[in-house]
Structure formats: structure tokens, C-alpha cells
Image (cartoon, rainbow, N blue to C red; front, side, top):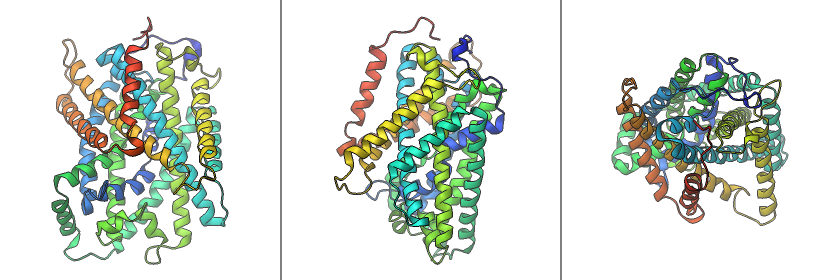
Length: 470
């Protein structure tokens, strides 16, 4: 299904992107380097010490199988829809305008929350890098604002430049981190009983609850692959390139995650307790005398920062095009569909997203400066946004799988091979992970389910359907 051609002001540059550009957008949107470094200790220890232990690599491999099923559902939709709305367009098609609007708004609110979290993360990493390399204390908020300025410049220069920057950054960072991980794997001493013994012992000790908690974080590692679909209108052959890019992204990231997670375990003697004590285990190894040196640690930290920059650049591209699609269909104000005359990039959507995030960064600093908060100034906001984004992502993915079961079972639609089992696996996995995430809400995140309910209620009940909506 293709929407009717938009007006001149809402038209993107058609036919400019090939498969490498789409893959760069999808891989960068996942943030493979940052995700592989940060989520490994969470998978091992979970929340409150419940996790997969030394079975981190097994959890990541199982999550990859589930993600292949979810990506298959998205790819099936992408073969029929070549507009830039991504998940919103899929749900609009399968569940109808009302629920498509509701889950579409929920999904892009989740994407904006994840984007802001990425900006906060980059600010913190930039401050750490400046302190480690030159001994200068650069405020995190200054690094975050500089990053937003760089992204604003890149996305305003056109989609081709943005995707090629992402491709170069992703290749450089993944190669460097991957080579160091392989070096650790080759030279790591094997603990008593070997890796298989440690893995099985951890899995038996943690039981089903430990594996399930590990799977929660393992699935979050792949969030962002669906950003490939936001470039459908600018792709030369969207109905072939988008599905291929999605499946390639899952495969590339799964292989990379397995290598990094195994290296993190091997370098720590397959001791999950040591993993849980480190925020980024592989980077911690690069700073130790046994495995690395200060210069190597600084270089890998810089590449991790570059990977986060590519990740939030991909996020800004996907979100701006999603907002443009929602504006075209009357869900959001028409001004958000405005594109530049020459390069055809979403002008208003980019300004709203990047300018709004800059304001939020400044507000966080202004409200917390000098209050002596424990940890970074933005940590409380970071935790809340992360919980909101994770729960919304599972709801949106699950709704897409449910919509696929409904839509492709209707008369007149060709039965896509393996779609039904893939959609069932995806829906059950998303429901399970979403339920676990919901049960973990407490303290500052207790209001996350309430906020999600409010977004859905406003979208379903408080907005009129635009006459031209598909």
C-alpha cells in the first residue's frame, strides 16, 4: 500500500539511497558499540542481582532468534508500504486509523525519549573523555549541546551525507571494539571447567527467572533496527532494500554482540559478579594493565562516543520522518510536514526535535546544578526516560505483531511464509518483556505506566481523524 503523493512542501528526496545507506541507518540506530558495552552487565546481573550470570552470550543468542521473528514481521509490512512512517504506517494499515494513530504517537514519544537519553549519554561520555585525555572538566551539558549542533548541521545537509557519516562511524567503531574483543578472547585464560561449565552453572543457578530477566535487556539491545523503514520514500528500491536492511541489521548486531559479550566474560574469568561491578566491562578491561593501557582506553572511549553520536543522528533522522508522516495524515499539525526546498529534509520536525532537546538539557542542568545530587545531574531523568522508552517499545512491537496476524489473515492477502509463527513469537516475547518491565516500575518510574495510558487515551479519544488519513 502506498499513500497518495504528498504536496511539494511535504515531499522528501526520492530514490537517493541504496542498500548500504539503509543498513547504515538501521545499524547506527541500534548503537551496537554502546549497547554491547552497557547491556552485558545488566544481562548478567539483571535488576537486583537476578540475571543470566555467565549465560550472557546464550541470552543474546536467544534474543537474536526472537528479533529475527520480529524483523520478519516488519519486513513483511515493508514489502507493501513504502512511506516514511514506519511502525505508524504499519499499524494504520493493520489496526485502522484510530489505533494506528494511538500506537504511532506512543512509538514516536518512545523514540523521542530514547533520543534524549542518547543525548544525555553522549554528554556524560564526552565529559569523561575530556577528563581522561586532557584532564579538563568539560560540563556534560556543554558536550550534549555541541552534539546537538553537529547533528543539526549534518541532517540539514541532506540524507546522503548523514547516512554516509553514520556508515563511516559505525564501521570504525565496530572494527576497533571487535578487534580488541577478539584479542581478549584469544589470550584469555580458561577458568576451571571452561566456559561451557561456567555458563551452564550460571543458567542452572539463575533458573528461568534469571534467563527471562536477561532476555529483557537483551531484546532492548536491538531497539532501533526499525528505523530503516523511515527511509522508504528516499530509497531507490524500498520494497526490497528495507526488508533486507532489517534482516542484515539483526544479523550484524547479533554477531557483534556475541563476540563482545564473550570477550567481557573471558576477560573477567567467567565470573558474573565481576561483570556486575562494571558499567562497561570491555572498556574496563582496556584500562587495565593486563589487557590494555590508558591510551587504548581513551581511544575506545572516543569510538564509543562516536557510536553514540551516530546512534542519535540515526534517531533524529527516523523521528523527523515519522513526525512528517504523522503530519501528512493529519495526526499532527501540518507545519511538521514542511521540507526544505533544495535538499528535501524535514525542516520543522528537525527544529522541533533538536531545539526541544536542547531546551530540556538546559533545564535539567538549571534545576539540578548545585544541589549535590548523587551521580550525574541527569541520572534521575535518564532512568525515567529509559524505562518509558523500553516499555513503549515493547508495546509498539507487540502491537505490530498483533496487527500483522490480523491484517495478513484477511481474504485477498497473500499468505507471507512463516509470518504467523513469527508474529506469535514476537507478540509473546514483547508481552513477556513488557510485563517484566512493568513489574519493575517503582520509585521515580512509578508514573511511567500512567504516562503511557494518558498518551494512548489522548490519541484514541481526543483527536479527530483527518479526512485524508490512510
